[in-house]
Image (cartoon, rainbow, N blue to C red; front, side, top):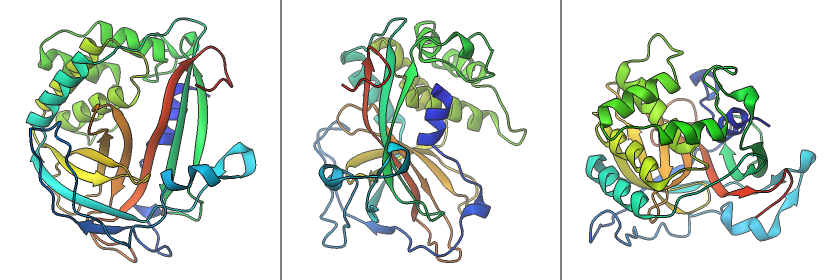
Length: 299
């Protein structure tokens, strides 16, 4: 499976027409919490309570294998959400954490293994997990042969070529993931491109990846929140504030300790049918990622 197909499986962007009634919405519970010692603090929000339903992570030991080898799981239906305001300082600090952390290397002939989980309340599909393998070096997805789809090797080389100047990083990201929607503003384009890089950074030099976080920190309107993902884990949600307060919202999720990509949420921002403002209608989580020697191999 190609890298872009795997990515789109992890981060679907459904049209509003797919948001049909018929399923109970995820509970959007506000929780009080506090941060100490800066963004890397061991923050914990107030208990969500008994309403927290079975999550993907809680049932990984009792999976039922469905058609196609995918695992079907009970849905995670509860969440919490706490706005943090501007993400500028958080992303700047995250860049320092990333830069000080380990790099991930791969070579031609190796594969990228990804295990992910998803809860999707827009249809009748059951929540579950999936595993994908993609070639690290795939010439059919390089040098523009697949449009703005890129192999993990080409993405690694993109990161290696990034300058230090955040404005230039933003410009390079725009060119790497070029515009496909005429209504998209430059700010929206840059946000989309930079978050796509973070979601697809399977192999990277730590210092190069940190430049993407610093560039993202300079985009106006980027905000952060503390949330719980579809696997019941704490996460930092990063999103671009919209001029329209009713516009549905895409959130990039980061691990609160490592600040690496950990998933996504697609949040409804207005009531409609059975959906309520704040409902996490779609939630995707990255459960594992690794460089392996061959397709089918697991870490």
